[in-house]
Amino acid sequence: LIPLLGLWLLAGQAPQAEKLAPYYPTPETIVEKMLQLGGLKPGEVMYDLGSGDGRTVIMAARKFGATAIGVELDKDLWKQSTDRIRRLGLEKRARIILGDIAKQNYSSANLITVYLLPSSNDKIRPMLEKQLRKGTRIVAHDFQFAGWKPVKEEHIEDDGEGRSHTLYLYVIQ
Image (cartoon, rainbow, N blue to C red; front, side, top):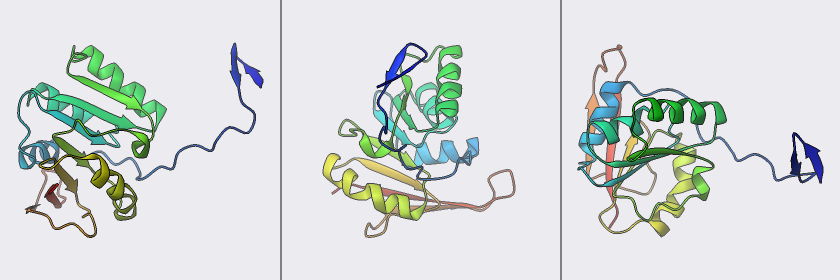
């Protein structure tokens, strides 16, 4: 055990969880389209995997009336998004978990949103298949889940910032 700022740390702690995508904020227009495509309704539970600055969680709680939970590995982004949720007074409906998306339980989800790399989608797919109930919706931004067939695809030619996006809606069977 090593003392550090009044805390005791285990020498040789487990390595940091793997980052599954670089931080690249989704434009607000696309966030809204993702939540609409996923059919998010008031009172439903929504998870954003790799929630970054919290914009998807905040919009889900604020505009759609959902219980919204983000999972973020980066401590600075977690703090930034948690502070913003507090400033907006959304603590009752929105929160961010500081942690590894591969180590959470998503069984209460009605909707999951992801903007991860294809290899990362491949890594979390078995976990989602194991945990999610029939009828749970997943919206993937730009990168599909291999082995799953989307029930709907939506292509957005211009997000208002000159970039195109493709959204994929999956429903657990």
